[in-house]
Image (tube, rainbow, N blue to C red; front, side, top):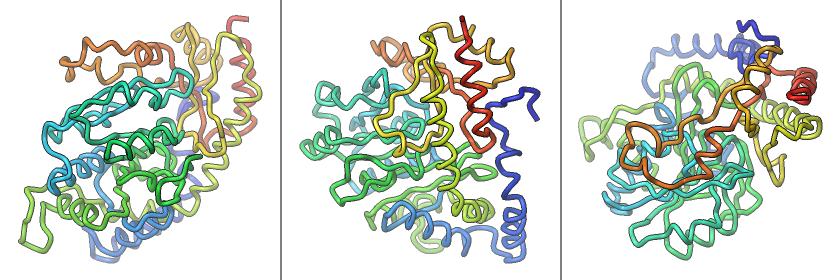
Amino acid sequence: MSELKYPFLDLGVINAPFAGALKEAAARVIDSGRYVGGGECADFEAALAAHTGTAYAVGVSNGLDALRLIFKSYIELGRLSKGDAVMVPANTYIASVLAITDSGLTPVFVEPDALTHNLDTSRLEAAMTPAVKAILTVHLYGRPCYDEALASFAARHGLIIVEDNAQAIGADAATPSPRGTTRTGSLGDAAAFSFYPTKNLGALGDAGAVTTNDEELARTVRALANYGSDTRYHNIYQGYNCRLDPVQAAFLLAKLPYLERETAHRRRLAAIYDSEIDNPAVHKPLVDDPDRAVWHQYVLTVEERDAFRQYLADNGVGTDIHYAVPPHKQPCYIAFAELQLPVTEYLASRVVSIPISSGTSEADARAIAGIINRFNQ
């Protein structure tokens, strides 16, 4: 347990209400005698597909593998080729970019909007090259990143849209997809989910999923995740072992019915922060419709970040940074180090995430807002 009065995130507290259901889920798997695949995985996939409004969901090992499997599947199906380029927001967690380069594809970094922190869709046309064949849109911090500009741009250029939905399960875009859906995970051609324990719907270990309406893609993802096999001992691809563990599937199935409650709580906390934080040194996130976002993170922008974080810690408030070093400045991507991405670098040096989960009460949020308002006063 954290010594802070208002810890940033306490997974023990968050999972405590589910303890009985989680233990029952684990016992169910143990008693089943089926420890890879099986009914728990199938049931969770069906529930996730229903939740997102997609025809198919494939459980996989984690969010990064979900993205990797999507891109590898498009290559196997001949819809992408190694060397093709994929547009990706420069302001994202490195997993978004790792999945692109691991598949032999080339990232084309697009700057974010300084106020929303999401990909700035007004910059897409300027970033377009003949090599670009897909867009990886990231619903960062739980805010949908899908609008008419992105949808029409992709349609005009015949681009595949892949969603990195690791942080936004249950969010809804204002602009519907060509199929009329608004739920993230159903907007593009395929979507990747992460159920890392810190996510709004978190497993008790690593877990992920792919959703799509494309039966051929779903079948390919499933085969690649299971050693490339379509039937036992019949390997049609050079695949991987990226399957969803049935224990994690059972945990997720137990928690999924409570996701809307978690989302509603996060929205109430965000509304408190929006209305009560009033400090000219602290800039709140801009969200056009806060009830469409699911608030995986509530991210402030502060010029004096180090001093601000120390001040909050001194007053019992835990914080985090998402993300301190952008992908193009990571040592593993030295080839991109000279890119000029000033908005991304500005945000990386100033963002601060404050508590926003079921472990934080509404009273806590009001107290935290009051502490923030006294910074530098």
